[in-house]
Each structure stands twice: as structure tokens, then as C-alpha cells.
Length: 110
Length: 115
View (cartoon, each protein chain N blue to C red):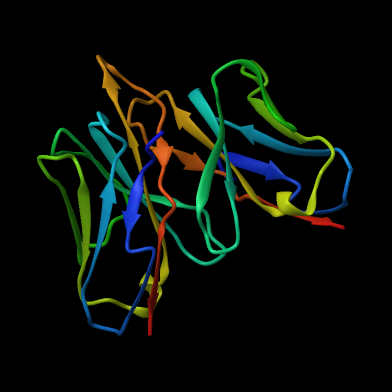
């Protein structure tokens, strides 16, 4: 069982739909990162969370430390949101190595 | 704001050749991390450096070596390349504050293709 699991693995949505991607982890963490990876591989950091909720434009990320769970929401989705979204956690073990989830491949259709 | 810079962005090599990937951290960041992401796979931690010293080691093959220089940039040297080394290699940088590391910022990655 992976220490970081995401769901769904693949998601196809129509433009304008509200999208939720979930991340569950089994280790104690000091931070959680949501990353966006476009075709070609470049990675963009969307959010870094250690508690609560953050919002940036149409993106909202929440984390529940007690339940070891985080969600990434995309409101009014657009085809340019099509990408792989990766959840990465920084364990409290002190090694500063991120553990990455398997990613959620999102395709938004026009 | 300046981000993490990696060069080259794309690289094609043949088996048994060598390759050098470079990572330039965000200014004032003292720690660099290297990750490898094979096709369809999760990124895996390779190695990290803090203040020019290796701070942690992951699944880095013996054929690979890395170092961090006095200007804090890092280079990943890969020798005797194999087909299975084809992957996206991206680095991240952060700054240490006392006993803690601040958040890591990821570079865009170098896509290596070994033919």
C-alpha cells in the first residue's frame, strides 16, 4: 500500500464542471504539496499546506491533519486545466524527502 | 520572482554515454533535491545537498553522482547510460531555517531520452 494515495486516478470532465481530487496519506507530515504536471513534464507547485485551506484563483486546497486527507478543488474547470495533479507529502521523519502520490490525470473537454 | 532553473530542458543520449544535468536553485536557497520520474511512474527521490554537503541519499544508482557547488547550484552526473535511465529529472530547492527546511520549490525538469 502506497503511503500517499490519490483518487481518482483518471478523471474526464466537461468544461465548467467542479472537480475534486483527493489525497490520503498514512504518515505524519509537516507539509503537503499539490503539484501540476503538464504534458512534457514540467512541474508547477500549486499549493503548500500544513493546515486549513488555501485558495488561488479557481483552485482551492484543503487539508485535514487529523484525518490525514487533503483535497484539491477546481471550480469552473477549463480545458487548460488538463494535466496530471500530484499530491506530495513531507514526512515529519526529518529527512526532507517528499513522498509522491500516483497522480490524477485530469482531462477537461471543451 | 526567480524560480528553480534546470538545464538542459531536453537531452538525448545513446547507451553508455554520459550526461550532466544542472540545477540552479532559487537565490538564497541552500538545499537542493534531485528526483527522477520514469514514464508513468511516481517521482522518486535520488539525493539532496545542503551547504555543498550530501544531506540525504535515496535510490540513486552507483553510476550517478552529484555535487553542489559554492554558488549552490548542483549537477547530476550520469555515466554508462542505460535505456531505463530515460526519465524526467527534476530538482527542487529550499532554505534551511535552524532545524527546519522551508518549502521546496520545484524546477521544470530535464527530460532525458536514452536511445
